[in-house]
Length: 289
Image (cartoon, rainbow, N blue to C red; front, top):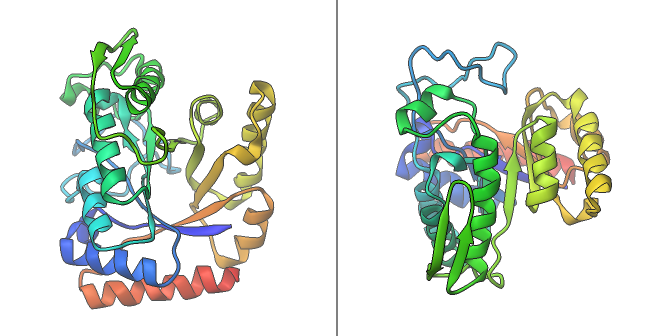
């Protein structure tokens, strides 16, 4: 089981000097992947319930800096050479799939094939309303957009006919570096999210899951693999714990997790941010070893 880091793009983690310090230190100290999430819009008094906390509230203040994850990861890619990169997650139904396919393939090329596109269906009705995208049907829209993007990555020219998007004999380049295929990871903790990971994606990213619930979520994922004829070992299985300590490492690894993602907020000074990453590595990576 490897260890990833979800620490870029928000608050102090949105400052370029901190991104540089965190990314380079994470690569030096053995983190496998850098994750970066997305919200285009936050509101001061949301009605929608945040699904990844007990109180239904997102911990990030509405007025915090929150970078576009594809741009933030492009910056991280430019200052590193080995560590992998992933959106965790990009809210796909809020975007044009042709544009996302282009942006994701571009980042994959610029990072020399280190990028995975983590996607989710979204939870904030207020965010969808502000962007002019229907909140209803967002799961179907997401599933169709993934299929459309896979077509664009693999075919040239490419054609697609769906409920939400359609195009005929268009060319969208560059292509991803891995044979016209870019890894897609589905985020979300619900049974429906786990099913999408199995039927549409190359992996699953569970976020803010209590350590005691990891085994049951992975069991659902394995059941879905059996139901749809998918080998469990074909998927990457990444999880960020809501209450994790290094003592949880053996149990999480035994449950079938392939990547434990450490979530945190770096300090504002670049030197302190690099030291913070080194301390996380001693806690999580060296302890794992």
